[in-house]
Length: 336
Image 1 (spheres, rainbow, N blue to C red):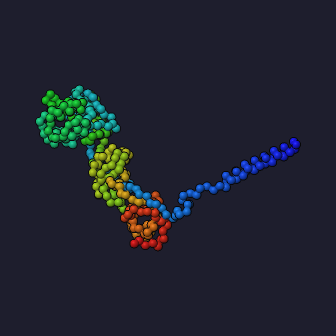
Image 2: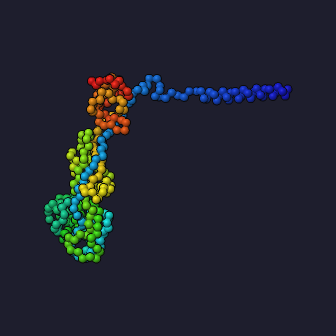
């Protein structure tokens, strides 16, 4: 009886092991799902083109001519009692570079350099220039070219200096800046020094006065800008930069060799308005003739214009949206 039980146990164990082994084998041989790309009806010889925006970037050399010596000058004579100057330091319009005889001087970047006292009721382009800069600084004035009491009160509230009892802006209280922000190159005046009106308080880093970009051959037609770290700068069709001073705040300008005159820097030359392109594989093009070619779709050859080629892809402009196209069409295909 004991021998029979042992035989039954062995047979049962063998069956169990066999079942386990069988299930293990079954797990190995069950086929995986067929990938969509290999499923019946999918043509591995076609591609679906994608559509993208393209600003046609080109790295171009920009030649920059610097202006002559510039600086922040004392608007009146006296003893320099405070001085905010350090080589490499930045001075912004609305700030105070110095005090003379204990009275602060304010730096302002007006389009027209100050040349007279401005009293309530005075009119002119210089008044409008002062009002415009006050407005830019957030003083809430209207640049109508006529100095008013409200302008005087806004001036007093916004700046470290004030008008006199009659609302007059004193010429001796304003140091003119050539730009909204400037960088100090040197400090020719010392604290405690007696200076005359017009003396240099802060010597400035020379700013770009003329800049021209070398245009690229084969570029997509259209209005363009120079794209630098500080932003986009409009550029004319011949490469002339509309506002050369805008380059001064860029890292491209800062990294240029100052010993090289004129300076040469590199910037990206891009379309203002990107063009819409279709991205295809280079192998999909047939009957290529200059910037003209065709791709082959379900209804035959479709003409396209080649816009650019980059990184193993070709950007084209078809006359109409493309469907699936052949990746390797018959090389003998002729465009219609």
